Length: 137
Length: 280
Image (cartoon, rainbow over all chains, first blue to last red; front, side):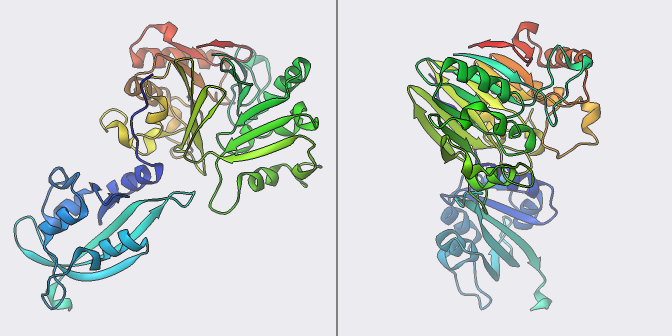
């Protein structure tokens, strides 16, 4: 008998549906750290369509962004809010610079938080990001 | 797999002259996977009469699969005769919540002031199992459950036995989380449970016109059910959880609408009706 195909956890399905309605940039990663969704606002923010980021692992995806801290130092993935949330399953917040798809660096704030299904199973991470003007430093 | 519908009405029991053909009892289905003790899907008011039948046949071990704990899926449990017999062994599956176990949640209904006796006083031996995201096997039948879209913790079930599959997704609004026509299956609530089922028993409470005022209430329309059945490639579809305000004639018109939208022969789509025997 054919097994049923894999299906996303309902929490991720609803998170994606919620994100698709938001004008704020939202990224979703699964429990393995794979980019499984980002919305139109996120595409606009990072200058890269979802089809180019879909299915990438977090470290591959962040390598494209080449994150820098406020002083211009490179930041390893595990020290970024996304990496910290993935590793520790705790919320995190940070400000830094990321390279957009067009090669330009921009300043972003981002908040990340773990998604737990109602049985407290860790099912992934949601990240929200905002562009910050340079003169707001 | 054999079975019988004991209640197919949604929301509230609705006896009367306009609901005679499809029945007024709330959700309850009996399933008999070969070689397995009786499996009961939900404990709406239809479970009362099933309980009488099970006592008559001397059944002492049974499995109750609750999709969720809204009253129309639980209200019959206190009048389910087997639970008042100490020789009965009942295994109950259902969704826990972040704040309370399945047993604690059932006890909220099964206790004063809503009922004079507390759940802890029931003489039957009851074991509780969290069905939030589970797979398990009993006597050769395989069960799986996952959370599905409906307000509050709710699951659907897939029962596989003897190479046949029954999927039970009552109280389900998959269109709330995805575009049923264009999104890939992995993003559609309940798809994994329903995929290529020989029989899909699915919520069909509303017409598309009624849905406009009931968006997010956790139920599906004829149009959505047709899209879901086509996407999941099910063989047969049974429309379930009939709206208490719908007459028998209205239900039959809804079935015709589903058949037309699904684009299949009419005998692949039926209306759940009290007393209807199932053979999968």
